[in-house]
Length: 152
Length: 152
Image (cartoon, rainbow over all chains, first blue to last red; front, side):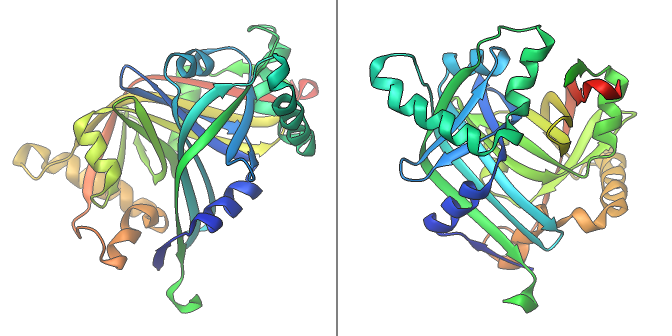
């Protein structure tokens, strides 16, 4: 198995085709990671997501430093992983945010089948019914890909 | 879709059958999450793993608070996720640790096909060649499962 680093463009390609990733946040040096639906807006280097109110949103409001990880694990010797560090921001309801909000919904609708982890909570009625639309502004990104030696 | 909380026993079952998870650590409130091979020792409530030296090990040595997430995403309305908070510890080479080390290797060997992300780096020669054996002592664990309403 050979492992090589991905270029920035390759990292973006992996993010671009990922509909599920893991989002990590932290409070008082305790990390917390959950699976999320995600939507990468390549031109802005922004990951959009949404979530019902709950622990994840509480923590990210308190500390906007987050990490997004996506991967494609095909088999033991053939996998790719991309890790992005960035900053959590909520997409509000102000006039200046209306374009970002429109774009976020457009992305969500392209992958309506993956709305689930974020919206599912709503159906239980256990948490606040208005999902939060957020974005992660990607600051740095690294990626690694493993391939069988003979395939190179 | 209905979402229900898993019992502690159900969380353990999911961890028990997971060979890949995501491990999050944090430094200066910046979380970092990567995919890892993992091996749950149910009787001890410990997750064993191993890794080449690198950013993940550096960060966990600096701050042992970690989070392990595993999931089974079958389809949009049918998924399970378990999140465990715990403490990172290295399994050293002392006499007292020999049994833990033996047990860790036994678990690794049961799933030799999933040694890869942790050991792959070794083949590149870019990092130290002796993998670190570690364990995460699980302190708390929560899980959620989504099912189609009609299946209940």
